[in-house]
Image (tube, rainbow, N blue to C red):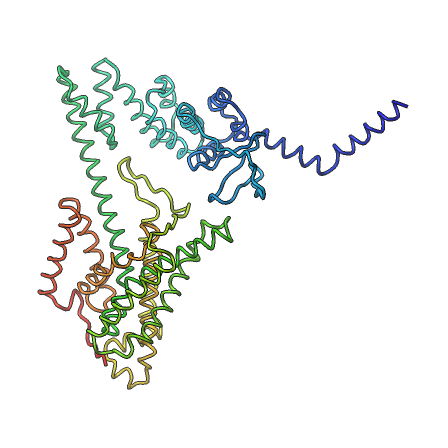
Length: 537
């Protein structure tokens, strides 16, 4: 009887173990047990250190672990299950990436003491050094340069001898020289200094300067240190000036985006639109709203919100601009003082509406993942991706605008009304409709400027006030209604303003720039490029 019950129980247990649900559970557990990140989370201090010394996974998995810890996204419960917290709202199981509906009550963040953090960074370098990808090996050297005390000279020498890539070999030579520089042998130290003379790292320059302050230096060593110091300082200064020029181009691109719409409306209508800065601000807030919608309803696609924010910012600012033209500006054509005061009032109204809707405090527009970071040309020169993207975006908008104004029927009508409004009306062009559409275009371009500004600065109700004066300066210096003039003026004001700030500070640089603009306008009142003719009713 007992044998029959045992046999029946064995058959039932076999059926459960072979069922799809049990098989799936076993599969998930096996996957979790095999995953190195899961192993790391479940391990104690000593086991984690052992895992880092002999990382069982891939380079990508180790980078992923570092990324999770740096962003405070790694969590676990008392059962050892690993979770990833995304955007502070979505909790996912790891490694299955399934969303957790009910959060565990015993959820705790996985944090590391400094010893393990350093071991994690060093393990990342050790794994990447074995990669066949030269970029991975260069990234490993970047990490090792910050952990010189942990390096084995024999290992670096072996890596240097077997390296085939010239760029990686040069970096290894620099690393080897940093280690040799600490030796007491004068000849070895001089050879290390000669190699380090090709560096452009500020910490290496500080090392040279510190060594030169030592007393009783060997004459040849002192001469080598002085030559290396001069060489490194020249490279660092060149990198810094390259960064300043790039920053000037970035500032110029933002000024150009802000001024393009103003150049169209001022050139066509003769209207001094003091609400143009608030249209920039509306474009920035539209970007914030689109980002919030993506976070709420499309969380997994939040890094792509900018692709939807660009047309949204253009359309919202365009529609508001057309409404302003219809209701406020149209009855005041030909009366510049009245339009200036009226649009100034509109700007105050828009600012107060934004304060009532979003609050007086700045709102956060996060930088998307694929625009984070930058291109490190030298250790002292980093070109941020978001700034590069703004420059490329400005060039694209400029090319589209030139095409619209010179290759389309609408652009022909705009140029005709700008040059001679009465003659344009005589040949059948509806100037009032062109005025509204051109004002909407200029307002939409202001919205695009706000969308770009949201990626590099704070978004608040006063955002437009920081750029409206500079935008008017670009239009006046470049010539009213002249796109090419606006481009040259934006480049001149952006780069010169950035360069002047280096030597005299932001306030004095702004004062000097305004004085130079006043002198230029007195010499050439019509700007760089004068328009042929314009008649405004």
